[in-house]
Length: 113
Length: 113
Image (cartoon, rainbow over all chains, first blue to last red):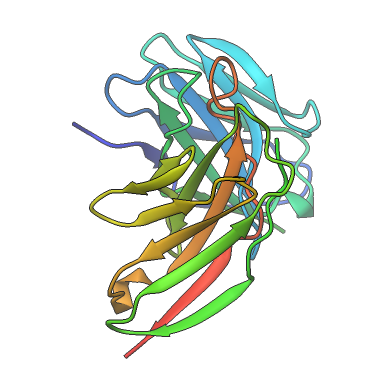
């Protein structure tokens, strides 16, 4: 059984650019959640995808968007990058949207200059 | 989701038992208590979950008093590899809410030789 994998592991962008982060969910999981973790803080919920549909969103602006594919992998897209978007972006999968036992990947470290 | 309060940091020595207490005074009847562990440069990892009394698994024990307004995560005989941030989360994660975890700042545990 493969765990949650994220790519890339590190990324450097400049303000105003767009970025796409990718996540492969754990085998058998149909739900993917994305979190943003600033340095020294706990992860903050961005949104969740369940069977290719957005299933809830945290307090993030519309320039944060996502997709989930038929194989349940997912993408997080961020447009018009701002300096404050610099953070660790974590993807987590679960066996169902009602399951709070999440399996997290190691994250993508995004730096916006 | 109920707000939680836990110590910012704790120090311990190898071989000691460590108890991390979390306060959640406004916990609701349907809320469960869940703990996650996070190592540097990794995503959080599910440790344990409980509703009342005591829960034990191969990693930790969770003690919840009758009024459920607090909980204590107990790590027996810690080692250096238990140095991590520990998050206490409280919420009704069933139904549609499973992946929408609300993380606080967590407790940074430092285990010394």
